[in-house]
Length: 239
Image: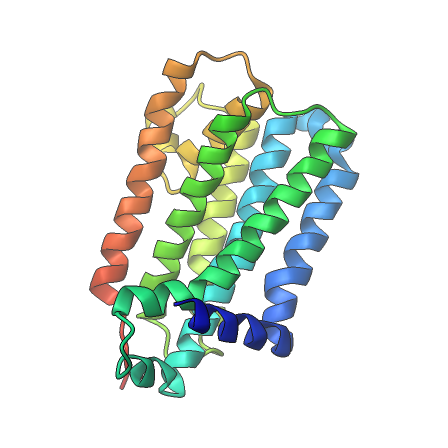
């Protein structure tokens, strides 16, 4: 698994498209939100800024990059060749997505640390960490499922768009308006509970027990994502 991860990390830094979508875009957008945090905070809150930065990094840096990478490895039959080795399916997938996931998490932590330094630190760091990991798990699962519907790396620009638009739109909707209206719908939408969990963890003022339903729904979406992945992921090129 580690050998696969090491090889994949090298490939990431050799691929300009992956570097742009996985590194440049998330850092640029995250930096913009941090730089303009006072203007955005006037409309919503620092928790909203943290949530939208988190989902931007996860959507582009993790989800899109993972789909593009896995589709490319399947198209050139690299996935098929790996299955002929001693590595298990779980080790192969983990090795391929591990570098992307670590990079996305590192970007997220770096941007949120800067946000906390230039503004106000999060009120509940442990809950924020759990929310970040749950969102990462959900996006990895969705990436594996989307790969099953993606014919090529170029096709990934189309197949990843619906998920990106949905999760960022939901994060913006929930982050700005909160859960006062349409609370049940917002919690059930992908990323809805996760957004409110991040907002609450950053802004504070809410008992831990009140955050448990949000955490449960977020983890539930991660389970759904991996269930979809187990159904739609393909090891060989789609015909």
